[in-house]
Length: 206
Image (cartoon, rainbow, N blue to C red):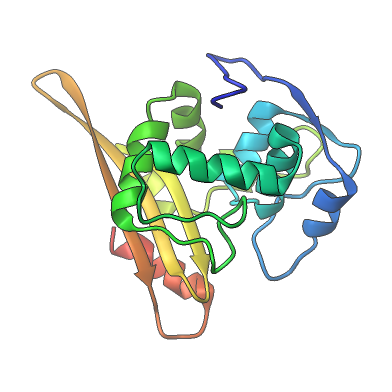
């Protein structure tokens, strides 16, 4: 959104799904978005597919579209993290799935404060579900906390080495002024051997 900003209800540029994104959508070992080669989606729709179902293939496709290659986008990610003072973070892949991509709760809070200033981003992470033309059925957010009043996103994340993780925001009014509260819960291990259980634990502890 820095180099391709969106405002209001703008859909943004059109992104064409490539073969790689379609192939990756069939991976059983990661969360993906249902993408088909040749499918054309708006920038806003791609961001929805990235943030709501945690589409790792959507993240990589956006990286290639934005920077020309995934490696070039990773460089941009690390530059942005440095500017935000995220001294404990290193990105080695666009989606954050690789175990070599690391961060801290403190750094994630710095990121939350930065991205939640963007009204389009705020609107996307606040959505419990989406419907996109050309994709069958509704796609649901895996953050159950969105069902609670005042809670907005921001992002879940889970893998076997990382455990369950959640970056969240909540808002409340004090003396007529809207206040935003951010929190990060990381490294939750349920001990069951199932990644989903660790993600559920991060939601329970938020």
